[in-house]
Image (cartoon, rainbow, N blue to C red):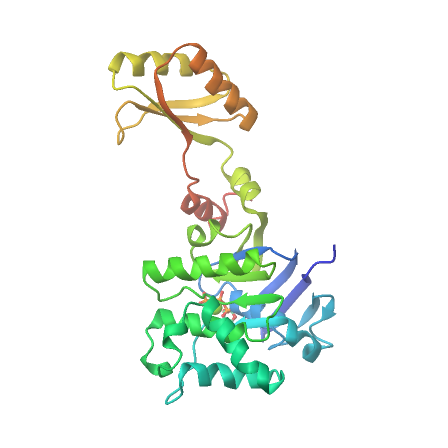
Length: 317
Ligand SMILES: Nc1ncnc2c1ncn2[C@@H]1O[C@H](COP(=O)(O)OP(=O)(O)OP(=O)(O)O)[C@@H](O)[C@H]1O
Ligand SMILES: [Mg+2]
């Protein structure tokens, strides 16, 4: 399968400042790539190069197989670009705003109302169709901006911090919306400062610092690479002797690095497990066979904040 986005050694310098360097990545239809990095890491610069808005100093990139430097006009119909700042538009209604962008892509005039209806529905803005743009809340403006990116039904979405400045509820809404677009087979790059914010709906992530992608790949592999043990939380019936017996059993297990009684949840033991999923299943089976009164056995959520800090403080290199 041909990658939908393919970048090879992209580099961008501003005078002596190297904003992006050695940026190589392939993404396929349906990939949602979480692009994480602190301020100044070069996220916006990279996204703008892919969006054909600035030229790389060197290196190359294609979208749907088309070279972004040599054929920017041919590339543009395939991409929807959401910039990190939403321009202010006064005295224009939501549908007029969308109609304006729609016209720019030159579809038959009679199909425009239908397109506008489609993008308003997808972004859940139908009831604001006749509202003035400046009266929308920040979250709605972000959604409108995303709606604008969708009018030409692009295969690729380049979203530069679409959730910045939003409250938790609106962040969830926009994340769901992006996940929905990914499920439609679009290839999406979405940037953020915060790894946990992206990890739950992106299948791939890249962590960028000072212009370089320090790691990139599928979420699960990266997290495993950086956090080799699985954290298991095992609970037993409310009974101190049951916890003691469980602790004793687990302490002798060859694949368990560390066992501690959890301080937050009573009758629960926290385990650093070095085995794989199959070995985890065997452990569960053996605990049941030994008649431990288990009430739950679960892998705790990955500590992505910790993973991010490990990468950006260089502990992985
Ligand atoms: N037009 C420009 N001229 C000079 N330097 C620039 C220009 N645009 C970006 N830079 C520099 O390139 C580096 C990368 O900036 P960029 O905006 O790509 O980072 P970012 O990861 O998007 O940051 P943020 O999280 O703050 O949005 C920064 O050091 C920035 O100052
Ligand atoms: Mg930026």
